[in-house]
Length: 82
Image (cartoon, rainbow, N blue to C red; front, side, top):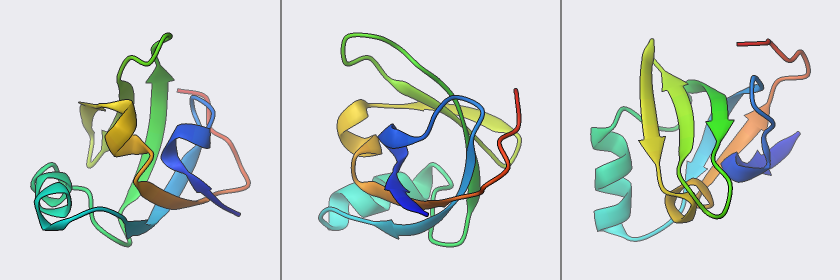
């Protein structure tokens, strides 16, 4: 099921399908290790528009909610508690 990274619940995994945005935005996301085909897990979301914390290649990354809205993922059906 395709959804935006912001729509995943904490502990849910997904594979990145697409990165939306301009060249600068895509370059920044790729520099953080986020690319199409990469499996990620959402660890937590902070309230009131704070950052989204994800796990990529055994590294925790905090990205802004605006950036997270530009990442389309295919959510895995089995949720894993982190």
